Image 1 (tube, rainbow, N blue to C red):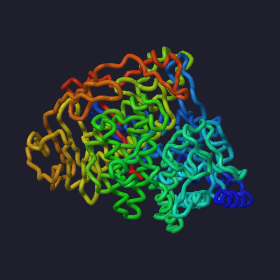
Image 2: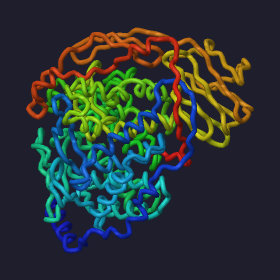
Image 3: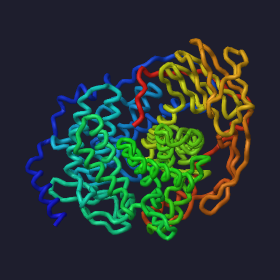
Image 4: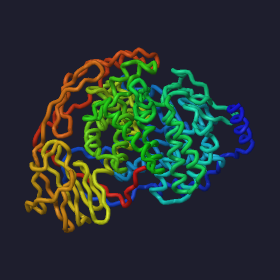
Length: 638
């Protein structure tokens, strides 16, 4: 009866659905001039060490290169350069362009690149054209995703999150109106049962009045929409909570920004669905409550990304219990990987969900990026100090999964400059793959989902390097950044030196990483030795003049550690938090047992190595001349 009522309710809506709004009123929202990055440029000689702004510039190349203007500006899901010529192995999906649109404003804030402004503009234009006046966002194609002419709640949520970033960039309140409209559509699509509400996972509502399961494949664990899922691993991708997460976040924003109580009421009900025992790992045999410990198993990205929404719900409603569950879920995620380098398994306990055990043996970009975002969110929420996690993950597995070496791509694929396929390599440069500890895995592949997710993590880490409020500059990470209030020049991992060039601050608070002892740090202000106050892990430099230069000098602590992943023990050498070597080097890819994951034979022989870092064993920092960008407006996190 419940499903019949839902059918009748949506069937009635079909007669009321208007055509998508016309494009004429979109020009002011999506014009290239409006989205063009605005800020100041200057030349500088700086250490040639990890620069997240430079990574953002490459990221933009991958984000706009992976959008196909010929098919409604959809995203190409999987690019393979383990063959000659390289090829698109899995084609267009309309599930993902909203992720690219969410990441692009952040990337441009970091680096000022204007590449692909036309692609960014037109991709958002197409999304706006597909949004009807009932708040349903209808997919114009139905390839890698739900059928065409259906409205997928999670994609609606992702598009609204992208629009929030666009609002933060230009301040045009029309975006808030669009978010309110999409929230209305999400309220209409939600299926309510008792005191709960949910969206059928991997499913979209069609103009025919029915829910349609994704075209991506048959469920590994039985699921028939729109039935209420009993557990987390039903469906094809098997991450039920994740499919509630983007709508939940949008409903919270609609309530906070637009004051719509009905959105908050629905958010409460989705939270109660989140907390069903079947959505969590069963620890009842240990005498622990199933759904109150934050312990989960299955798809790593699906679980941790769902925690982003859980934490936002907890903060928005000041629910202390939910905050602690989110923190426990993050701590559990740290435990099942190697947080020291940012390696987190694609799946945790995959065999329990009928998946190949090899899924524990590599990470995907989404996994590492989720952990950076969650670490920053928890820290900003006052639920712990996770800046060391951000530093370790960012310096290591996060950036290793971004493909930045065109010559290496050519070597792996066998493509020479000017050969057929070389333009494809250039187009996808800056995108993101998955990786084991010494090679890309399950092969030299680039994923349309991992690329924007990883790029968002680049922004979170970059944003966290230094913050500014009421004349006080806080430096949380020893990574390079040019900011309006202060520049950070880091000589790590070559030398133990960090230089801060003040612009606006009267006080600077500088956090020391966990591997660094206070007594070993020498501090200088304008070359004069000083002894700053210590507040927790922060050195406090007060009464700073404009243009003052703070210099920290310290020994770089080296260590060698052993870690076990899947079926092998690796020896990893560190300088500070930076991996400089991993042994042994893997010689071939894993054998996969699942048909869906079985790749061609060349994946085993086309090896794209990672952690090629002999240069970091040197003790003299290379310098280079760069053109730095400082944005007029630093976009907030979300």
